[in-house]
Image (cartoon, rainbow, N blue to C red; front, side, top):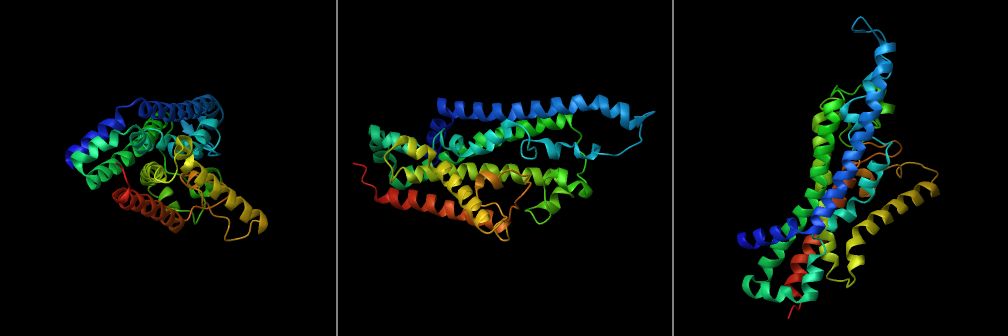
Length: 294
């Protein structure tokens, strides 16, 4: 089993699709950080001129809004890069290795491996490798983005009285942590985003058992997210925006740590994660055992 996992991880992390996906997502994350940092540095001169005298702050105004917890890619809501990052996250999470079973089955490579390792070992090892490859494509860029932003922005505690500018509403998931232990709030969202990226990757792996089209396999998690976003929009418009439809149900929306209009509810996130995990893991292990490879 260990050797099978190592072999699948080498295939997952040492291929051009992993490098392309990681490179593109890192580019989005770095450009978002650069854009936010440039804006902040441009404002510093105005702050020094209007809000400081003899080294002391004479006015508060909006200065507390400019913290690293508001302007990392999970908190900012102004640049094009943050939008591209979270919208395309399901695609780039799948691209490194999520569609590998489709290609290996088509080429006949899988026959050679399964005869040596057995079906159960092969599918479990591939599931682990697919999950890790998808998670890393998101985890690494998010860490890089936050480190860059934290090197420029002060990491001061967000203030509750600026809640409108923080984009984290009361009642939203982990909002109490954002105003008390913000670094933990950011860390949890980085882990959550990485978790869903891994789940997207293994869900595409599962879809490849039923769909025999490469493009459809790669874009299946993206279509799932867009369908949920369309459903939410439809429910809100049909109910005139009333409760309980003012919540995020599309992962591409609730994986972003900040939101202006709709709340992120913990049990919704948990239910979707469990649903994807059961569908993907169950399909891969059960259908893989029955799949006629030869």
